[in-house]
Structures are given as C-alpha cells and as structure tokens.
Length: 431
Ligand code: SAH
Ligand code: SF4
Ligand code: F3S
Image (cartoon, rainbow, N blue to C red):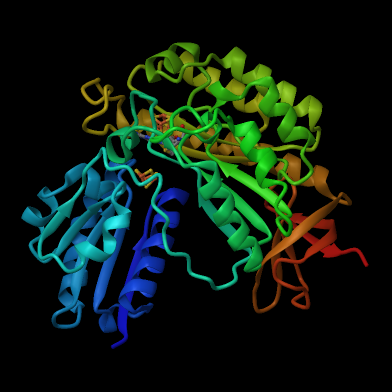
C-alpha cells in the first residue's frame, strides 16, 4: 500500500541533502510518496537545525501542533542536528515523538521507522561509504555530499557536536552520483560539506591522496554538467592552487562563499577561526585579480562575547573593503557543548543595534552594486519559471528576474540587465 510522507526541512544545504536522501530511501524501499498535507501523512518528519537557539526552542511547540492534527496512527520522527544534540531528551519532553534520528545516521532511516521509540544519534557512525538511493526524477540542480562532519572547533559552533568528525566521501562514489544525476538532466552540481576545500584530509578506508582542487578537475570532466558550485569553503584552506583552479576552470561558477564571521583579529582568534583579516583580504584580492567579475558571499556573527565596539568597526571596515555580494548575518547565539558557551553575553540591545548597522551598510553596498550592473550582459541559467516571470542566476551568482515565461528550465541565455529595484536585478534575453 502506498504510504504518505510529510517532511519539513530547516537549516543549511546539508539538511536539504539529508532530506533528499531520506525521501529517496523511503520511496524506493518503503513505498512512500510525498505529501504537503500533514493531515493525510502516515509519517511526519522534521529535519531540524540547531545552529542557533531560537529554532531549537520552537521545535517543541511545532511538534505539539503537528501531534494535535495528525492522522490517527501517524508517526512523528525528529531528524537532523537537534536530534543529534538532544537525543532521547526529545522523546522525554515530547512523548508524541516516535523516533529520533541524528544528522549522522540518515542511512538508518528505513530501519528506524519500524522500531518504536528508537533513538539513533551515534556521533561516530560512518556513512561515508553508504550508497543512498537516488530519486531518478530529472532535476536541473544536483546537491552532492563530498564530506560529512567537521574537524574545526570554532568556539561558537555546535556543528562538530551534531555531525561528528570530518570524513571525506570516496572520489568514485561522488563521480558515480554526479554521472547519474547528469544523465538524468542535471546541469548544475553543488558540492556540499562544512569544509569542502579540506576534501581528502581523511577517508575511512584506504584511498589515494587527493585534494579539493583535484576533485573539482574530475567533476568538471563529466559531460552535461555545465556549472559547478560548492558550499562551504573555509577561508583558511583557500590556497593558491585552489584559487587558480576556481578562476581558470570554465565550469566553476564564479561565485564563492567566504565566511568571514568577524573582521577583528582579536575576535577571530577567540572564535578559533585560524585566519587573520589580513589573510582573508589577501585571498579576496587574489580572487578578484584573477576573476574581476567574481561574486563573493559571506556569513558574519555580531556580538560574539568578546566583541568590543572597535572590533565591530573592524567588521564594518572589512565589509566596506570586500563589498560582499551576499551577506548572511546573525547575532551570536550561545550553544551548549561549545567552548564559548559560558562566556558572558553582550547586552541584547547593543547586539541588535550592531546587526542593524551592519545590515544597513550592506544594503547600501548592494544598491550601489546593482546600479553598476545596468547594461551588463550575463550568462544566466533559468532556475525557476513563475506565472509572469522567470528567474535565473548569472555565473557570478546574481539572481536576475526576466519578465518572459517562454524560456526553458535549465536553459542558458545571455541576459542584459535593464533595471534594478532596491538592489534586485531585472533583465531581458539578448536575442
Ligand atoms: N561551515 C561553515 C558554517 C556552518 S554554520 C563555516 O565554517 O563557515 C552556518 C553559519 O551559522 C556560520 O557561518 C555562522 O555565521 C552561523 N553560526 C554558527 N554558529 C552560530 C552561533 N552560535 N550564533 C550565531 N550564528 C552562528
Ligand atoms: Fe562550525 Fe567552524 Fe566547522 Fe564551520 S568550520 S561547521 S563554523 S566548527
Ligand atoms: Fe543547522 Fe546542522 Fe546545518 S546545525 S546549519 S542543519 S549543519
């Protein structure tokens, strides 16, 4: 009999990928189909994120509201990083939960759904050699894991505690998956890991020596793949060889995420990021020199416990110097099991003001940059066709809206930028 799965995914691209795996395993081995209507679901899965405190707190009220409307006999499962972080505590606090499956135990999904009140959150579980089922539906974009876990110990970050130590996935498995996805219509590949450019540092079984640059070269040999992206690289591992490959390999999208976190050397040291602002700028300058049109994105945390006013100004200064094209910014959120957890927090009003100042500065930068885009021509891949317009991204990661629905999904078009509204870009196809 056909059973229905409802799944809601929070957090980063790794979680999106894990949800893809969960769906594929349940479809192929347990005969589930997806539903968006929670009331008809036989299985409800929340794939959770625990990087900041608020979503974790909201989880329990969310479980409560699902338990109240679910079909009689339907199961609720909590997967992902909060599952890893809280484990069996989840079932204690929310008895309506049927199972808990940690972020590093995704391959156990088909066994856990049939084991009442099971909790599988083994942090050393090694899934790097597991061949997940793949839904064979054609999709223009393929997310592919290249490593699991993270070996860094950034003092604010819970991820090493929820996803365990870093293990690279063997090259042959990555290439096999990429080939299958390309054969099924994928045009773009996004390589995923917490630290992608540390690829090859450790495998769980004997493996030839390889690094991220080699992996990029191998992936780009696959016919049909036209654009390669990756997230997240770590600024510390951006060596010259990697930057040169990034700049010279035509298939690699010229957009790079460079998570700065703070522009102050003192705070970077307290965060245990392993680089200085000078190193970061040197890397940015090298990338910009080799790739003048590059798009650069970043993540920034404001009000880390040791951040003084002058440290915050250093962050503003770096944002002005680099002029990031995308910026995700957050107020520091203390997380249990991290080394910064017991540090005294900065007053929340000061923290909120700093975030606002930073975001306003970035808005101005984006507006200025958007004006400079007028009349430029970009090669755009169409990612979405809506009722009255299509959306796509340029090779350097800019989102462009085209008021033309007569384009093909996954198709590449030369698009000239005609206007911008509050930093958003609009264009038309050059015929
Ligand atoms: N591996 C990536 C980031 C993973 S977490 C890297 O090294 O950059 C995604 C983002 O969440 C981080 O870049 C950071 O900016 C933010 N983040 C992580 N822990 C946080 C915390 N305790 N409080 C606020 N933001 C946090
Ligand atoms: Fe967290 Fe740092 Fe690892 Fe990124 S590199 S996942 S911020 S510990
Ligand atoms: Fe969140 Fe886990 Fe990703 S904590 S950001 S879902 S690695």
